[in-house]
Image 1 (cartoon, rainbow, N blue to C red):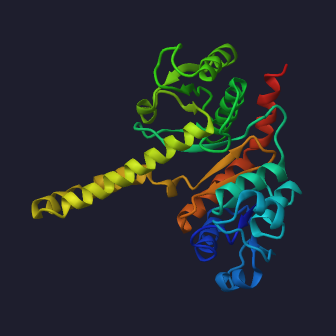
Image 2: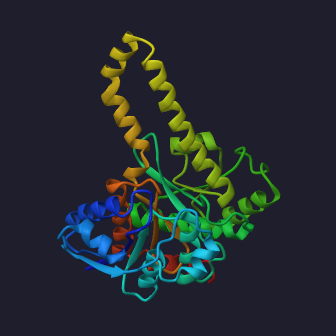
Image 3: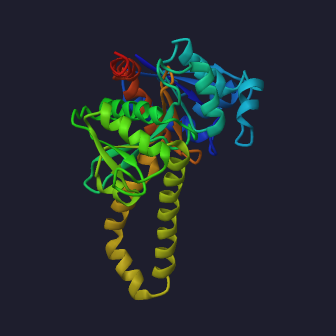
Length: 331
């Protein structure tokens, strides 16, 4: 059995949507077992007798979205998030999922699980869709703001290994997010990072500009957490803005409404391709354990898919794959 610890109290719609997502997930995989962590009485009420491959682990405290990462780490040891991560550290669970406070999630995951050897700065890997119906990964989107040129190399290896683990594609390519394709573009740090990536990775294809990403120029896009976080939120904001503008324009005319009705299937397919719920969760790569963060607004389908991510990474030995790939650069 693959055991995944789930923070039952984290997220905007916890615990109800978390529990509903778990119910869906355990029906997807016969060898999946869930350790549901949180206030046991609340969770029992939500389960309503549903107990298939689910075990409740009591945790009295809850980390809210307003808690500071340091305080959550040091003062809420009995929280559902903390206890769930400890289950992974103690090798009781094979992975961990939460939709809770992102800052607390990163702090608790990092300091509880620790870094893998040779990893100075872990990174959050976000799966992104490409126009050709394939998908890739951006790393990092917020875990490590200040990184060194060599950290880009480690992030590239983490991102490539993660993507290989879920796709089995042996021909993955890597690019460095930058303001231009030319090697001399960028800051002093990104120029040095370019050299290190070029010298160490045969899969490296050079710089990638932001507008090229979704057109599948490369499979793995490497950047620092500050830039990656801005990029991710810009894409999310642009999509939400586009949807809002379309709705406003459609409502201005009966003709537009008729046209929108005819286009509804195509529009639905397009937006589903970009919907974060279909990807479920983003793992913190570089820590010594599988730790997956779902969006704070996640409902049952997103939680189901986040659990699926953790399950597949555990089932395909992600951490051992990391250790093997990182060992190669130190030989």
